[in-house]
Length: 173
Image (cartoon, rainbow, N blue to C red; front, side, top):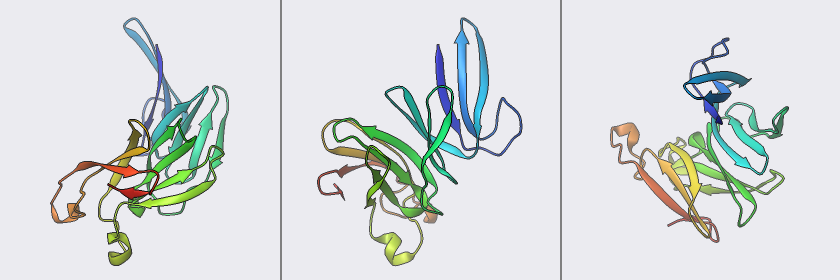
């Protein structure tokens, strides 16, 4: 069995650990790990034969099995994390911790809109929720994980949640 994973940990020049995109091949009790890309990587999602992954500093990349290409830059200071693809609307969603928002891209990774977790970022000038990842269930719902729905995790109120966004309205339910 083969699988891919990302790591946003400390930088390392070795092939076995540190931040980046990795391929792990498992045969029986044996395994091998190969670093395919070095950088602070977080979310990844397979769409067809391509694997898309996030380098939080450089943007969204695609891997077709042999080459890695940058498909979209992300706003500076976004701290991009989770990435998912919705087959129903052919859009990708990128969760940005330092923006308290989710960016919606079309199938060609052109930015369509930004879904805000709350108005706190605008009033305080600082991210308050620390949103991390996103995923879909059915229909027009996007689910986003975060440290704090109240926006008070910096005050030791880690009341984490999975929040639902309505993709028709772009609003948090």
